[in-house]
Image (cartoon, rainbow, N blue to C red; front, side, top):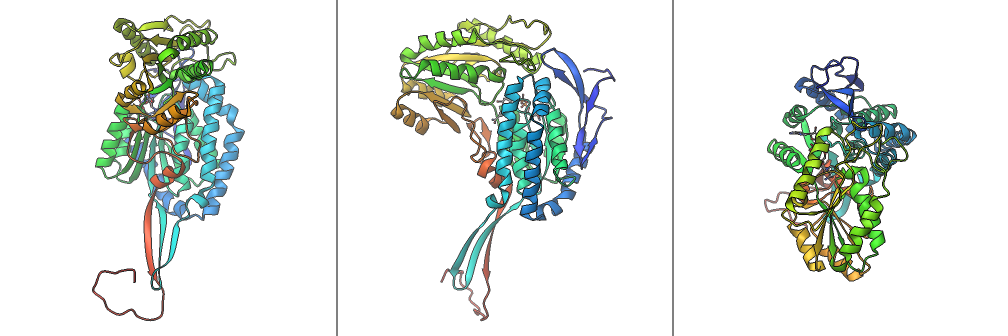
Length: 502
Ligand code: NAD
């Protein structure tokens, strides 16, 4: 851990103020393109976590009672401020995460889509009313907020994933404590500052940084009502089990191995363009990256060749260089893990069609770079197939038919996103009907749903039932109440029988 005192410290945001600048424990925040520590981030201990939860708890009664129109007005102002700061957000995220600036701007655009949806909160929070369910009796349902909600988010989308959670939770009347990834913590702080500027009362949205001990303190806190998690599958399972055992509502989105099936009748050029973009964009560090292609029948040879030709044109470099198509991966440990997987693939006998191990970026020799890598003739037992590598490594499997391709996908433990490229409506329809995944693309490689639908996977990619943002998000962050009411002048008299609708 870096001990220099000259480095800037990134603090928490609690009750409308920066805090924790003198925290005894801190982590290093890298510039991944140059391999250097650029700042330190405060790690919250149990006392800091408690002060954030207490601030959120104190802010809850007034926020949850604020008229819906006033809540919406703050969201509209927040949306405007976020849009005014696109360049600042993109530069911050590129410098801490490593992704190219245009990709960071794309991430923010998808975050803003979710804020757009949150702005419609008066409409989304409407209940239902049934008049005359019995004589002079009406029944209506309302949805009410939960209290203090917590979000724990991964490094790979430091703006979009937090917004998926806090925008919907706060729109629904909850208050919120966000624990973003300690790898790229700055965007969360800027989001919090802009939300305050938009008029959000102090304590409604708080940000605390840290690692496992901060997460554990949040999961143990008795005043936390609900937990949303996005990250790797082992931690998602842990958070789900721990929070649920303590009586909290929880949704935990995990890792992925997203497959794209390429049928022999597909436009191979379009499929190769899509695969290269979806496998190597953000250096493969997207939960919706395509990391496995399944080439059916005669598609395999031309597909591998088309990918090879396209990858030869890609430029790998620092995220803030407009000429770069792909930046570094997030840490030296991630780079070493990915290289190790490539070794394992070679040892297991997969055909290494493109080798990204020896890449060198002039001027960034210490950066955490791995070049685009492609394996062909991969089998289902190889670790490069069974494991989520989370780097720019695409593995190609070959299948003889759509049946066999579907069987490969069925056996895979993950079920986040998937895609099929074909010109056959019948094949596409069968695929969308039978495939076990939460998000399906038909000639679309990264089918992240728009903000007014919901995002979530199946199998080991999601623990919990409700997906995130969209209508599922509002359901997750509210609880239902059904009122049965009678207003009339005469007394119905005594009746010890069970009430019926007569
Ligand atoms: P991660 O699981 O290492 O970390 C996620 C969060 O958990 C971070 O805030 C981290 O501080 C915390 N954490 C880490 N170790 C912990 C522990 N032992 N106990 C408690 N908390 C802990 O994930 P990451 O490396 O930041 O992100 C990449 C992963 O996230 C990939 O697996 C990717 O597929 C997944 N992801 C999934 C989705 C989705 O929507 N399903 C979206 C984005 C990323």
